[in-house]
Length: 483
Image (cartoon, rainbow, N blue to C red):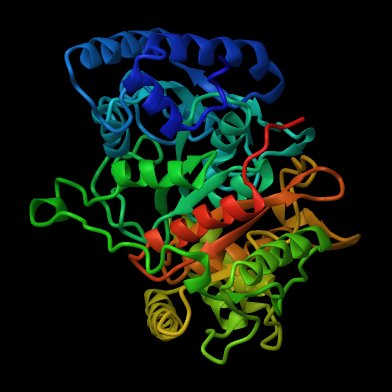
């Protein structure tokens, strides 16, 4: 039997039934990587010897009567996570030889759950792109079209899953880095509620792996089915044992509903700051039609929805001010001069990003206060709705664009070019207030490329969008093997 595209849930059942061994699954996964990854370049740091040893250990543990959630299941890990004995570079040539001394907390949780780690997956330089390429490991291609990006920054993980290289992967998300690669490669991903899953050890080298509470950024699961996302999220969720974990555990509430007909869903397809391409618009509407057909209450507008323009502005302010906070002083002074030269009437996202590069602490506090107002607005909305369906980016996967100055890049939306980073406004809709969001495939574009949408849910009610994702998978289908 071909095991490489089976779900983690099915693999776990087969392992428990004795239909296959972890050693067999691992050997088959490695053989597929060695055969197919030359064209994809998803696995940038293979760890096959230790994977085979871990698989043998999993089989021995099962023979002793042990059973754990992921016991014996082959998985991959985004390169940005520390794994003892393997380099962590974030694609930065200066740190190509950096070797962490301990596993990231999420890698430790994978291993404790019995997973077999096949290796690490490729990322963009510093995790700062919507593509995955760097000087150390090269470019990861989209399994559906090698001339296009697999997304970023968890693009290697998404491409690996779409190619059958392991049943699960873990990634991270600050600017859609879980959801965009899932959308581009036709898989599932879940951006958890901010703070739900500990991030220690997912840190740029050579910084120490401290238990820091990150702003905006999260770590989360990637899979080929919605149920597998839930399986992996249950392994990942919970506070860091060095801090909040001393005092409490996490118990997520159940999904609000079990049946599609009970869900109340707000569907969005238009953003005031950037158009939605026809292929993505069609994907949103396929989901909307499936919801209506399943008896869900679907609305297209609500006065409770926080202002999308202000949400995008706040997101860019928080994202950019945090990203450039460690810039050299000389660069900072140059940016201040450029920002001071902007017209007060220029409220474009490009201008917003430039001003955010020189935010004062006072500026950040003001933006953060506005964020809290938006969070309250979302709480009010989710008293009336259970989920929001909307795009992840305006287009399917775009052709590789390695222009070293991303400010000169353009995203083509139905033949019209727009600033490259403006496409992040949809990802930021969930990221800025810290809401959970599940990326689900909806089918393919006329060119045969995957198209996904995101299901945004109430804070710390992650099981609600995950359950809706599962019901939609039953209704419209899910992952397809790339042709």
